[in-house]
Length: 80
Image (cartoon, rainbow, N blue to C red; front, side, top):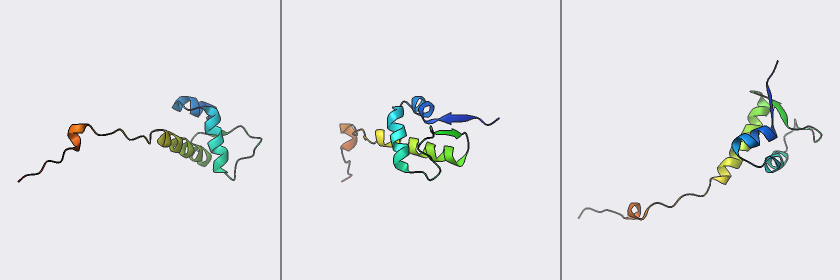
């Protein structure tokens, strides 16, 4: 029997709001998705990979804040 997952489970596991994740999935406009479906996919399937990609993009956007380098790292050391 095939193992399945869905958007809510994936979002919770990644620490994301499931509603935000499902919104991003709808925005991705996958040709295989039917609006009445519940974003359930078979693990390892092409659909699962597509959903994982959207999840990864959301996580990357969330972490786009680049920490500032410490003050001592900003100094330029030149040899004279």
